[in-house]
Length: 125
Image (tube, rainbow, N blue to C red; front, top):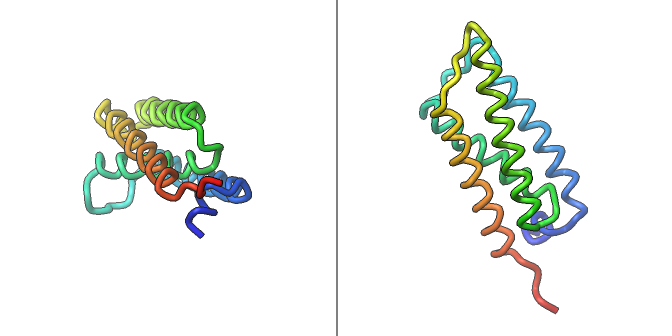
């Protein structure tokens, strides 16, 4: 089953739908006046959030390095967009450290996607 989830093209649409839901949730959390108090610290939330976005985004497309690079760059731009918007909101603030945590999360998620796909690779014929 894991092999199908990670490699079967039929599941890619579901991964992309999940990515859209996660992006909507991340945007809501990023722009709301008072983020919910969740233990663990802001930077950890950025790291884990962008790791999840990247993993799900990578699984939503063909398993190629070029595709993974495009997903990673798009999510880094999204992180920069969030910080830019937050710099304009009176109830939020932008931080370079948040963008750094986003980048580390993207690297973690991309690595996880690569390892998962390699570990559960289809058997060679």
